Image (cartoon, rainbow, N blue to C red; front, side, top):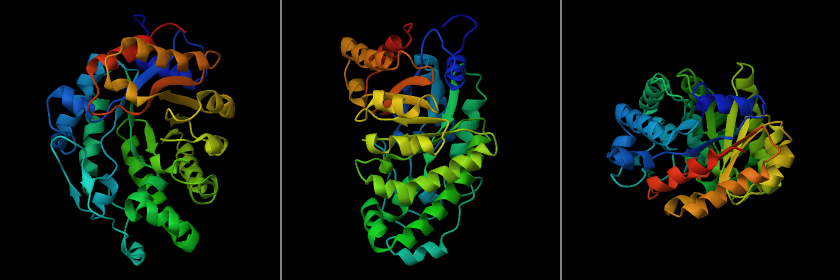
Length: 339
């Protein structure tokens, strides 16, 4: 990086479709940052000051072009009354589902981000990092509407519901979409970019027809909502998404982040620079200190995108907690090389 070019400048270049000297790059650093910072996962997910400090330290240590405020994906259900268990050495876990009984949907209300559950914790942490004067762009991560619906109902049950009770699924999706709008606006007001996590929306779990009927309209609704406020949305989908790439692009997000099982060349073709493509180095590469293997994985992505301007090199998903610091250093080392 030149003295006058900061990480966020490379990110801005990608979104402006400018040809930069190198690709913007970042690994998705979540709870692995807690390990490097010497705090427990429980502290990382409940103490805003510690969560922010861990992400700031990770940003200063690894110098990614984007630092992601990746906490967990049960904040929204917890804010509605879901019981959640916390652990020192692994991610938290919810107990059951609020909508085991579908009739309870009528009694759920959109939580208040400034008062309910851990939403205020998360907003405070985002604000702390946003105000830290980092060179990197900063992104928040909240549930997308389908991911939240799965957290409330259970993935297996909601998939069956798409056949047995499609009207209920659409009512639930409309409710979860309103939650996304509310929490997304509050998160954006911290000065961070909006990212929607939609892991269950991939074809590793659902069919293209389920995506088309029950997910796509709500993705478009959220994108249009924030576009009207001149705010772009990044949608992240894990797993295999080749069959729905065109549909994802057609929803109009500013960026699509996707995982290693999917085809980068195919996504770049489907996007055709209409959206910024982000990905898709396998997260398994971060579990060892094999420098050559990491460089090879990163370079494969860079070579596939050699003619693209709207592209950012990233891990396909969140870097696993057991990952090594060296692997992240090797990732950034390879990604920073000129294109």
